[in-house]
Image (cartoon, rainbow, N blue to C red; front, side):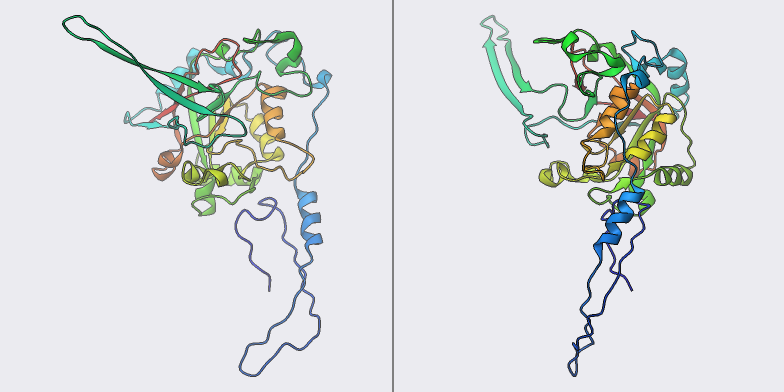
Length: 349
C-alpha cells in the first residue's frame, strides 16, 4: 500500500511512482493501539523514473534552426498565419456575441517577476480659467510596459546565446531606445481561431499542483474530452487554474508552477499555432524537471521557431462556461523596438 501524493507532486503526469517500503523488523505495537510500522521510502527509484520520463532539450545549432521557415529576413514568425482568411474563419465562430475579457487589470498589487515594477503617479495637470473651467488629469506610469500583467512576448525578448529569432545577433540590433529589428510593433492585430485546453477540468481539480508538467498525453486527452482539434494558426490557451492565485497569493503564484514541458511543447509546435498562452507567468513548467535547464520552452518557441507566448491570462470564465472554441482578438501596443507588450485580449463566441 503506497503513500498518496498530491496531484502535481510527481515530476510529470506520466512518471511512474515507484515507492519501496522496508520493514525494519522492530516491534512497534502496544496494547490498544494499532500496529505501526516504520517505513523507509526509497526516493531513488522515483528520481530515476522522473529522469527517464521527462524529456530534456538542448539548443540546436544555428545551422539547424536558421533560416526560419518563413525566410531569412522574416521578422513576423507565426504571425505570418494572420491573413484575411484567418479572420473570416474566426468570425464564423461568433454565434452569441458574448465577450470574455482575458487580460488582467494593471496595478501595483499584481504579481511582478524579479525586479519588475509598476508605479502609477496621478497628475492633476491644470484647471482652465475660462467660463467652463475645464480641468485635466493624466498619469505617469513607470513600468516594464512589455513584460507586466497579461503580457505578449515578442522575438527580441529571449535569446539562445547571443542571437534571437532567425539567428539575428543581439549586438547588431540592440540600441538604448529599442531593437532595430524584431520589435513588437511588427506584430499587428491578432484575429484568429482560439482554443482553450482545460487541463484543470481534465484532472478534476481547481488548479494543477506546483511544478506539474503537462504532457502530450494530457493535451490529447483534454482535446478529446472537449471534442476539439487543433489547426494551423490557432491561438492555443492552456488553463491550469493557477490564475486563481493572482493577487490572492502572489508569492505562491510567482513560485514553482504547472505548465507545458519539453515534449508537450514539441507536440504543440508541430500543430503550427500562431501563439501559445496560459494562466501562469511562464506558461511552461517551473522549474523544469531537467534542473540544468532554465525556461527552455521560451527558447524553443520564441527563438527556435518564431512562435509567440502569451502569459498571465485570465481564463476562469472560459473554463467555467466550457467555452473551448472562439474568436480570439488582441492588439499589442505598437512599442517601437519593444520586446513585448502588455495586452488585453478578448475571446468572442
